[in-house]
Image 1 (cartoon, rainbow, N blue to C red):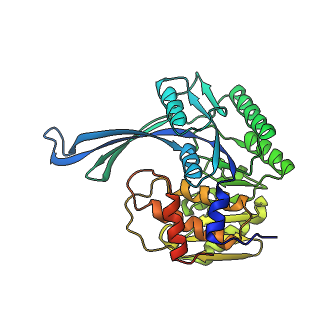
Image 2 (image 1 turned 60 degrees about the vertical axis):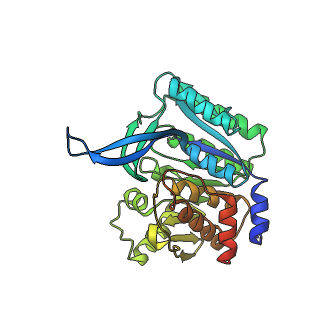
Image 3 (image 1 turned 135 degrees about the horizontal axis):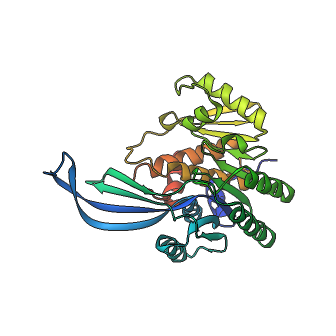
Length: 333
C-alpha cells in the first residue's frame, strides 16, 4: 500500500532516513578563474586562477545530497592510501559523515577529477584514476563492512552509485541484493555500462538514455518515446526490476512500475552545468522509495531536483528549502 504525503510531510520524513551508499567515490577539484587572453605558446585560453576548491564526488556526492535533504548517509567504498585519500577522509569528517565503510587500498590511487573553470564555464577536466576492479581480498573486506553496517544499523534504503571505477562487480551486487531482500531493504541503482546487466531483482533502476542504449545494445532515440518504453519494459521483465526511472535530459524522465509507465516533462531551466545531476536524481528517488511514495511523486520530485542543480556551475547538491518551495509552487503531489 502506497503512502500518501503532502510535500511538507514528505520533506520532514526525509530526516528520519538512514541511507547506505555503495560505489565509486572521488574528489572533485576545482580551479576557478578568469580568461582574458590567449596563450602565445598555443591557441588555448589562459585561465588566471583566483580560487581552488576540493569537494567529495561520485558516490560521495550522493551522500552529500542525502545529507542535504536531511537524511543520514553512510558511504561504503575504496580509496587510496595516499594524500588524496587523506584529503577525502578530511572532507568526510568536515561534513560529519562516518568513515566506517571506507576501505583504504595500497594498490590504487584515490580518484580525482580536476575541473578548470574560466568565466564560469568549464574549460578543461583532468582525471587521475585507475578503473580496474579492486582485488578479491579488498572486495571481501568491503562486503564484510557492508554486512556489518547492515547488522548494526537500521538502514532504510541502499543505493548502488556505479561510476565504473572498479569498486562494484557482479559478486558484490549479488551478495548485497540478496542480503537486502532478506532484510526487506529496498535497493536503488544508478548504473554504468560495465555492470549494467548485473543488476537484477532490484527495487529501482535509474539509467539515463545513453546508459540504456549501451546496456541493452539498442539504437534508441530520445524523440521516439515508444522505443524507449519498449526497451524499459523489456529491461524490467528480464532483470526482474520493480521500478525503472530513465532520465531523458530535456524531455524529462520516464518512470515504469508494473505494467504502466509515465513521462514526466522537464521544467524549463537555464542550464549551466549538468555535472552531478544524476547523483541528485538518484538521491531524491531513493529517499522517496524508502518512504514508499507513489511512482508519480518519486519521479516528479527527482526530475525537479535534477533540473534545479543544473542551474549551478560545478557538482553541487540540491538545496532542500529551494526544492521544497519549488515543489509547492508547482503543486507536485
